[in-house]
Length: 145
Image (tube, rainbow, N blue to C red; front, side, top):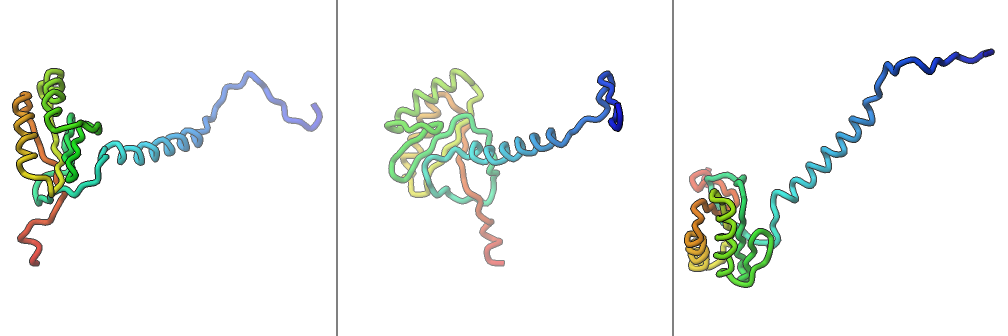
């Protein structure tokens, strides 16, 4: 062959181009970070949560109950017709998982009696691990500084 380089097809590939692998990995990582934020807070009803200076914002949620100011009730991102429907849902979930954890998200304007009624329904269903979702507020003694 005049003027051409001879190529032997039996040579092993000695170099691996990792650039495409890195590009795909970074794109997947960005997609994961963007979607994780949407999955972590499945809020379907806009509400103002009560503020607390103690506690954490990360709670292992297995069942969530949202009590909106307009009277709507949402259990695990699905609207239910009335608060009394929570009993059947909680009882079925508790039978599937005895270590069921429930997080109640109630708007600050929801009546106290309604929240107590939901607590009573959960206790009757056998749920023992109940938490309340709150938004962070600085401690009262630090506000004056």
